[in-house]
Length: 256
Image (cartoon, rainbow, N blue to C red; front, top):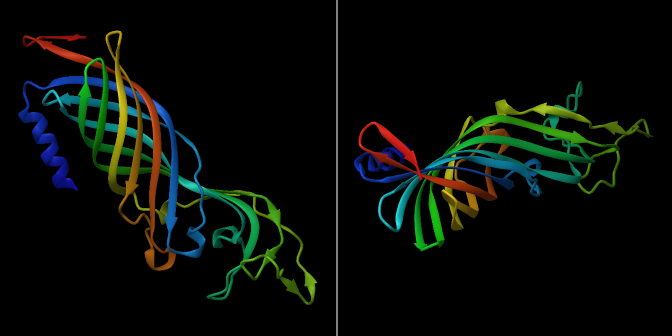
């Protein structure tokens, strides 16, 4: 991954005549979280604000290189009967191999700063169509789970056999709380991105609308033997604006 970044950035340096555009974008991310353990399965997408800054180096009329820095929310949510996280059982020590279940809401929030470097192929004149793809590295800035709800705890995953002590059913348990899981998630993630978009000349620059798929290819769990293996991914939809910067001589830079 590091070698790919070095090669791509060297190609920028070697392209002294490349046109430069700068831009910003904002939109929504619809992430997906997949895991191999029972506690990491069954998540559905949550929505989060997505956005970032980008540089675009035009190498040929059809090809450009586009490094970016983006805020990318990942994770997922799960509602209904599910395994109770061990961190939620304060003061309770379970025998090894014993799992408890309850009906509550669980949202896992993983926020990253992503740095993709993309190749972008563009066709068209005033209204342009483009496709972009390339690798990315992501740096974790926040990792937590938020649980809500209260209810009985069960010994089976279908939620039909409540826990009893001396034939007495235990009262409902509150699951309202926030758990920091940063130590369980690796600080760096990596993967590939690809997208399709429309770009139209408006004013001094160009407005664009893009849909992009982000696919993590590395395991994000710090302790895979106990927590299993999980990967992140998302669908990002964003609108943005690009402005071309032209150099005139050595000392003057103008926006166009």
